[in-house]
Amino acid sequence: MLALSRKKNEALVINNNIEITILEIKGEQVKLGITAPREVPVYRKEVYVQIQDANKEAMTGESISALKDLF
Image (cartoon, rainbow, N blue to C red):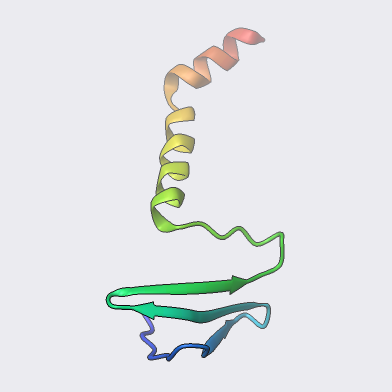
């Protein structure tokens, strides 16, 4: 993991096309602004984990056997 210190209105760039800017700092909370191409998905980690879990659940044996029964 790379750890960087940034102040309000400072930014970092990832892969030449994603920019993350520190918009606001209030106590222990930091507000970030993310500029990325539309084709790059950006999720909060807890949402990303839920999506991954739902995808894994959809690929269970029951789902696959139900698809096989269609054919």
